[in-house]
Length: 400
Image (cartoon, rainbow, N blue to C red):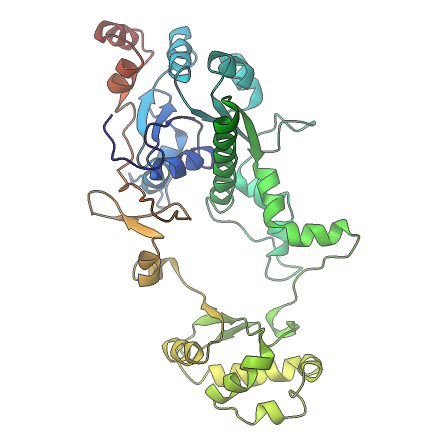
């Protein structure tokens, strides 16, 4: 397959995973030019294809994100000829990514030991829900259950201590975990450059979720109590809190450099009197009278719309962030300017790019995700199968 020269041009990655985290790690590699072959079952393909935010509509928005740039090989891994074909691909591959449950890998002859024996330079990237040792190693999980719920994140981000736990959005744990998986793969590729040999890399939703919640967890590991965050009105610092504007928009302010910024901030909001008010003139006083200061700021911020406050706060260098909506992403020029949102190759839509850049290295223009088995013929012929061989596999139902 002809590809524009890029960082990972010539690197063959087999994406033998499903849903999000494992495949998304391969997607990051594809953004930098890797040839990613997506393995999926004939027929409906990867179950992630059928998922979407609009029930009942024939859409594949999620699939376009996670499977962009990839080539699809729809093959029945329960058939001996299907496994044989995958083994042939593995023999010349650089990276193999899977999140199949460990017992399934053994049953299908896709374990790390079996595949690495076929190709000593192979990087076998293993993704699981709860790790590969311990009583729960074979347990299945999604990011909502293993990343968010189990690690304390879901509990910690609830609005109040006595409200139901917050529900996570699709992929909120999977995509950060995919970045961790990518990091492991690239680290192993670096090791291969030094030793000439591949290796097994592993990560899990549980480990990535714990890493995301590490500040709270580390505090508890030192035997300190970690309580729930107080409600907005009881926040310990009025200068690092959410506020609502006249047009009912919210933003969060994080003014931590008080010594340098406080007087300018109070002047910008029209309250030049506050720095000299005994209730707020020192850090200790502001802490003691935090609710009074919060009520004053509530009243001031309610006098103008968000657009006006953005200009004012930017003007005095205050760190803040609007509580944005998904709708606003469409018109967020900064997201495009920094390369977070990029157009598909056909120019019809945007997609979310891999979350980092390498100076002097261009990512490829994102290509549309493949249909089920779209590249069967090409991938199998590259692996050494003749036209007659491919026809036989089709007749047996091994490939779509």
